[in-house]
Length: 264
Ligand SMILES: Cc1cc2nc3c(=O)[nH]c(=O)nc-3n(C[C@H](O)[C@H](O)[C@H](O)COP(=O)(O)OP(=O)(O)OC[C@H]3O[C@@H](n4cnc5c(N)ncnc54)[C@H](O)[C@@H]3O)c2cc1C
Image (cartoon, rainbow, N blue to C red; front, side, top):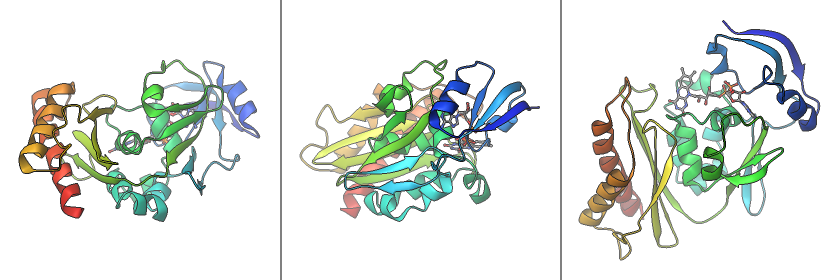
């Protein structure tokens, strides 16, 4: 059972950050994950009063506040138009609508789950993470921060740019945690894939061999899928073995490349 001794609705990021420095205190997102903890928390720090629950649009980027529910991200018109619906596709399998109304973008990114659809799509969109103390960094840099870090995730910044995105995942049942996640992006003649739920943090794999450089063919898509599956490392857990994940990765990357090509 989770026990909370004291609850504070932070009035500023500075207050939240200061409170978060104590090891026994904890920042709250939507609590969809932390409610399952079996521990006692000194002070639970609620960011709900800091206006971080919306997505702002500027000329260059979408600024996604840490407390934005996954459902708001899933339904965002601008982000879905920019990704041909890949954002909605990436989130629709996460449990159910009521759950996605509660779980937040900040909690999802901060937790760095090895099964995350959210991290996979945001990495594919070349998002950056803004931390209160450490400032702005790429998703890849954020993934490498020590888990003992006690910062506050303020927002996620998704740059606006012309790109084609296809998101696919493999699940044993419809709303289960994914066995593998995959996003393929084409931007300015370059193709790259992001593969997650391996089951470890998502990672970017570029077409370093130029397999798709002079256009997409069945053979090129297949070769790129095989190349990504060869370069990525996979693990086994109760959902799937690493050999299965490796085969699924090659298939999903190939399918995503061909889908992007078909949709032009
Ligand atoms: C049953 C179940 C199934 C799930 N299935 C999937 C799935 O299929 N795909 C998927 O991608 N995800 C899945 N998730 C994860 C889910 O989408 C959320 O990522 C998760 O619930 C965390 O979000 P939250 O807002 O509830 O965060 P919380 O549970 O409140 O917090 C998670 C962690 O992040 C910290 N934190 C929260 N916000 C901040 C912040 N702004 N700054 C610093 N630290 C912060 C908290 O202290 C805590 O350590 C699943 C979760 C559950 C419980």
